[in-house]
Amino acid sequence: MVSSSHKNDVHTIIAKPDHSSTWRNNLWFLAAIAVPSLGAAIGFAFLGAWPILPFAGAELICLSGALYYVNWKLQYRHVISLDQNSVQIDIGHYAPRKSWHFDRQESSLAVTPEKHPWEGPKLAIHNREQTVEIGNFLNRDDRLLLLSLVRKELKVGTHSAPGARQL
Image 1 (cartoon, rainbow, N blue to C red):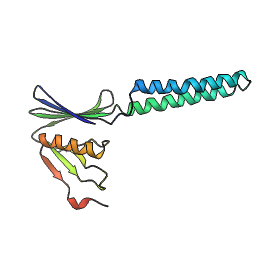
Image 2 (image 1 turned 135 degrees about the vertical axis):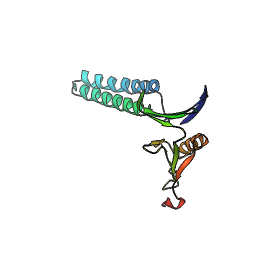
Image 3 (image 1 turned 90 degrees about the vertical axis):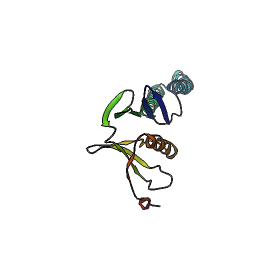
Image 4 (image 1 turned 30 degrees about the vertical axis):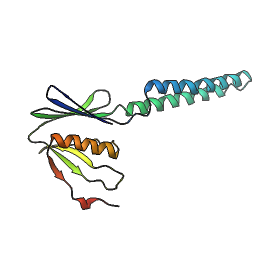
């Protein structure tokens, strides 16, 4: 998912993965699975099959861990802030883990065409010393949207040959 906003002469572009569900909905799903699972496990425990209880608990712990991990991975984002003089790229999950600052006049966009029609083009913002790939987790439509938004702000400095696509 790609969003864009303007505020105080700063253009901010945010690229983040699509969410299939919120954390609250994941908790409701976990509760809907836990009630029958633990109900059946407690019923069998009363009938004498008590070893089923740890397995039911382990199942729920594994499911909740997997749901948390997926939700954490979906918090990943690239924030590109462009003002009159600089380009700032922040990458992280809940807060920026890595940041790059480029002079706007020295930075440009590198576009590498997709190798297969289902993929989107690879995008990177670079200057003379560094290159930062952006939107590598996005689907094709979102990458094309990100390309159009960044292309309006930065010049395309590198564009690979169209013959680079392999079918």
